[in-house]
Amino acid sequence: MNIKNKKMNKKYFKYINTLFVVLPMTLIMAFVGLIRNYGFGEDWFFKFLNAWTIMLPVAYISAFLIIPRARKLAEKVNL
Image (spheres, rainbow, N blue to C red):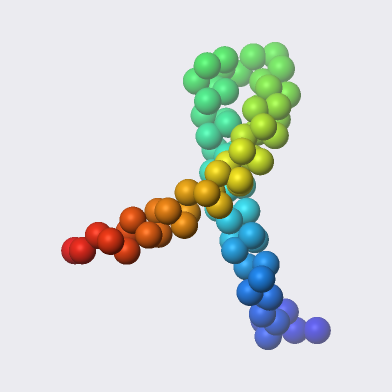
């Protein structure tokens, strides 16, 4: 089966696209926040995972609330 010819169902596109944006963003933010506040301590990786597992669902849900409003605001801006 050739993957290049397959198109994603439009119904799922916005959910997958948002996940691909939120996933690396929350990984970076959790890492930066952890290192800034705690440094590379003994259990830094577990603190990182703990922070990230809370950040990911919050950011994912928030994105669906923010993106439509941001789109409407951007459409109002005349450049």
